[in-house]
Each structure stands twice: as structure tokens, then as C-alpha cells.
Length: 163
Image (cartoon, rainbow, N blue to C red; front, side, top):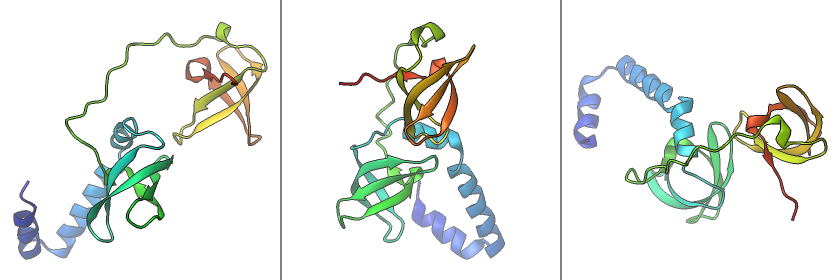
């Protein structure tokens, strides 16, 4: 895409209202969960990535530290600072496709017992750990390390093996 021509055209021909409408439309596209999840699936903690620093409009190298639902924390190599950035700021190689994993057999109720240590990924895309306190018909009640209790479908649970 010819960004220089596009910006020149917008600067000379678009009204402030049209620019604001364009900004709103772009923000709406960037905040779609499907876009964020598609990027998140290609990332893991400790991975080195390139990200766009909107303050200086340059790409910088950083290491992924932590994930939230709509942003991730990175440790920037160029200045040593920890920063929360949007998923859209990550520069992924478009030629790299997410490998299709073979279908797994989902865990069932019979695979778990009271007191098992398990983990699951919450709605905020952060992994939570806890122990099974109750086994229900379709879910397990999990008491997490922070004291919160969750009811989680067996299909979303993963057994944690203490080493």
C-alpha cells in the first residue's frame, strides 16, 4: 500500500470529521477479539518480537513478558523498559502460518479427581492454576492459588504435573 499517497490525499481532501470517522473505524477493527486472538496464538512468554513504538513510529525488538485480554507486556531491548502494548503493534511475519495441530481428545470428567492440580486459561487469556475442590456433572469447581473459585468445563482443564 502506498502510505505516502494515502496520507497526502487524506491531509488535503478529508475533513476533520471524516478523519475522526476513519480513526473510529480503524479503532473498531483493531479491537476485534478475533484479530487479537489470532496474534496471541502466535506468541508465547519469552519470545522475541518486533513491535511498533507509537511514540517514535519505529519498530523495536522486545521480549514478551505477560498477556492481558487486549494487550501484552514486553521488555524493550533498546531502552530496557517494560511496556504494555496493543496486540496490533506486534510485527508478525505474514508468511509464517499457525501450524494446524491435530485434534486432541478433550479431557472428560473421568480424567480428573478431587484434589488434582489443574490449570486453565481464563477469559482474560491468563493461565490460572488451582486444585479441584468439587466435581460437578459438566464442570469442576477449582480453587485457585489467589483464593478465587471458578467452575470450569472439563474440556478446558489441563492436569498439572508437579515435578
